[in-house]
Image 1 (cartoon, helix red, strand yellow):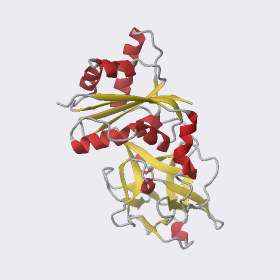
Image 2 (cartoon, rainbow, N blue to C red):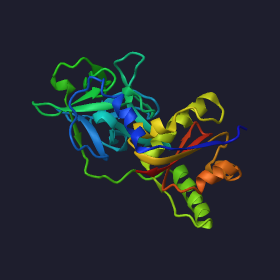
Image 3 (cartoon, rainbow, N blue to C red):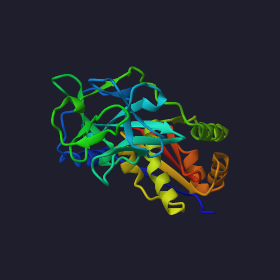
Image 4 (cartoon, one colour):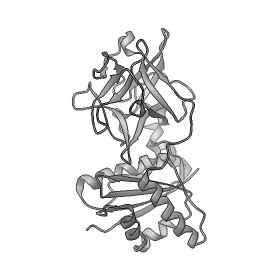
Amino acid sequence: MSHPTARRAVLALAAATVTAAGLTALSAAPAQADVTEQMITIQDHQNHHSLATANDEGSRIVARGYQDDSTRYWISNKPGGRVDFTRNVNGTERVVEMDTRDGRTTQFIHWWAGDNQQWTLENASEGGTYLHDALDNRCLTYHGLDREVTVENCDGSMSQRFDLSGGGSTTPPPATGDEARFVQLLNDLRASRGKAPVRVNAKLTRAANCNAVRMSQQHVSGHFCDMGTEARNAGYAFRALGEIAFYGPTNVDDAFRGWVNSPHHYDIMVGDYTEVGLSRVGGNSWNADFGTPQ
């Protein structure tokens, strides 16, 4: 079994502008103003068919004639006028992505904050909204009921206009079973040390997912993603960050015990952070990011 690993970082305010500067070279469509994190459905403007996935696990995006949990996404602000569309599936964040292997199809896979997983929104004067992929500024395109939704060259047609509907709620999705159990154990530990409880932040959960995915791919504990970059890409502005990682345990209690028994991990778990996000990938890859927001 691999040993857990940990690290911490403190970021000055000036460094928080570095990532934003790197986005200005993109040719992005005008973004709609004042997008807030909320639950929505994405429907084609003409027929009101909702975008969904067939099996939740890496499947293509298709259009359906009805709405249920499989057609509801969280729309969240990202740096540079971008947004993403995510959903919690089996304890991990999944995101609408343009598949870079063919450059046209869309799929629903692990969130890792790439350009092909972020979108810009443009109001259509004829009604509806164009969804441009942030990678090369093409348009999401509807092809009919139960058919794949693709990314095509923008032509202003009705098939490229969508409605983002059903919003209104700005309450973050509840913590997953693993995350809720982790936070319960964590706050009990913190209370025993006279520390204030931490709360779940969905942006930190998304930031933690990158390293959990990489450990799952390499079958070893380690830090393979830059946690500051991942936090900023998730839209999390922070004063301090800490990260604990563990590849091997098959349940959250074992992962927690391993971290507690490691002095460096323990110090982070009872440190002066106010928020946390836990990601589990592949059954035995665990990564938790701790943060104190600006």
